[in-house]
Length: 262
Image 1 (tube, helix red, strand yellow):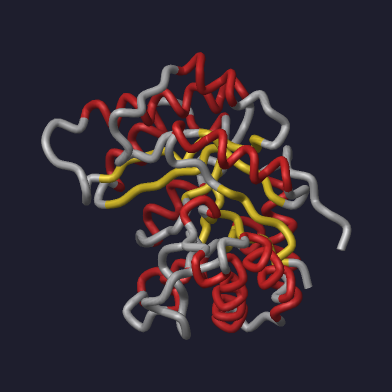
Image 2 (image 1 turned 45 degrees about the horizontal axis):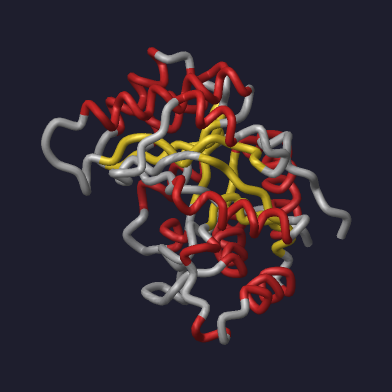
């Protein structure tokens, strides 16, 4: 079986339980059928470390971008485009809007999001979009900036079918995290039943949002299997078939990523 963790943060994992050895986490992922990881950038100051990890492992890709909550670490479009030239950078982001953690005039957040969309269009690389308590503005800016020309993924999707449909209509994929395994996630579960099978991705967003049965504990890439199993069951599909479809979807969207032979 071949699974992809389409969104994780290896640089943010607590390696103390593994004696500082990232290889142990990688090995657990592979033992659970997870054979490719997209290690997503949220801070440009951390990009060199993230890139170093991607260069070390042939089955780890990366992105470049600024999370909407990151401040004091600004970037212009030219710098973003320059950094994204590296062959291991397969996406732009994560970017987007987050009104949950931010207050005051958030025009800076919206302008940063626009900049990422423009860079992705020029680079012809997909966007990784984060949205929280900002669905209307997120969709509006994507439409205004022509995000459909770049395509991408709505990562860690937590909205309803209306938002999912709007994103799908702009050539975006929908990615589900361990949240979908929570009993309270009824709306997200319904979306997962409706999204076309060829537009679904799965992720951990580790070290956050561990799925049941590890909810409340640190998350890691190996746990993406629980999300895959849950959605496969929701859709009455064999796990192996769902795993292969989501893996095919990933490499279709992130065409710069090289699928390893397993």
